[in-house]
Image 1: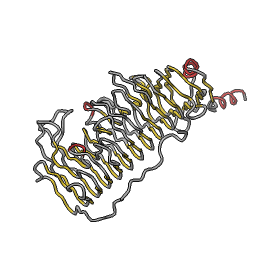
Image 2 (image 1 turned 90 degrees about the vertical axis):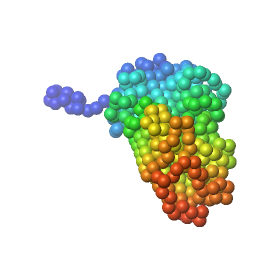
Image 3 (image 1 turned 120 degrees about the horizontal axis):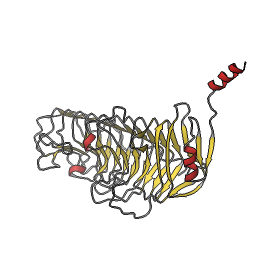
Image 4 (image 1 turned 180 degrees about the vertical axis):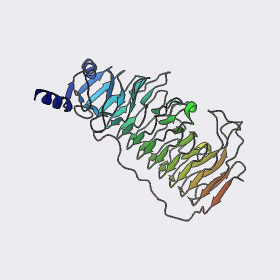
Length: 404
């Protein structure tokens, strides 16, 4: 009987625990004993210069959770940062105010302990001071595989470095497939140099890696850091159902192939330099988007197809091939569709095997097409200035944390 009871006890998993955490020291101690299903509950209040690191293994049914005692009332300041590695970890309700750390939220504990199947939700990273730094810094860095960042508010970055980055490796096979959804990316002032993107997926060195990320149902508002609000630098990503409102920049398919940009709304609200989508590379689809009140020209036209560089280096401009531009609507834009923009003096290759079809193009403010190169490789069909089924007004879902 005793052996039977002992065996039964071993078969029953440990009960999940709610563990109150008062400060960074208590967090470090609790992190040493964390089990699947446990929840670390951070006390309300201001956490100054708190360096929190956790490596844990939760499960889909029993994740490890780090959450605020009251969402929005656990406030991290100064050099505070959160780094989590392992699997099935959920972070809920934290607020990082005016951060000065080079990395604020990292989905890895260190270079060898990345996060997978984990989630940052209902959190915020905001800055309302005029911080300056020569070091590149990120508010959110996403590593590993199948992570999600959702219903967060991220705004106010003034220092060099992309606000949110998906990092890839040329060595790893299990990576990417992240989801970035229902976030509100608030204002970011002009940086005055490269490195002011709001989101970047990959980089030049890893741009031929398949990231297969989904960026959807986000609101980008006055994200003016640089010309590229979103910089795509990997393959197989999907950008859909996002709203860009008063953004002085574009969604740029800078490097990588086989991406889809669909059913987004680009409403410039007349903001200076407001653009739409810039196309570089192969097998991209730009479909069902609505472009309205965009003032940008050249690279910041509503739709810009770039010239390619022969034998382009990884950080150059690859020729546009097999692009599909279809069923988009262009309303009251200063410059609608530009074909053949040069971003480099070596760029001479026009788009080939590219089709532009079934688009509604309002020409009350700008010509339907601006041609700057040979267009033998471009087919146009059924593009019209007559109304069709495309939307007339931008709409977006409420986004960001519920407590904001």
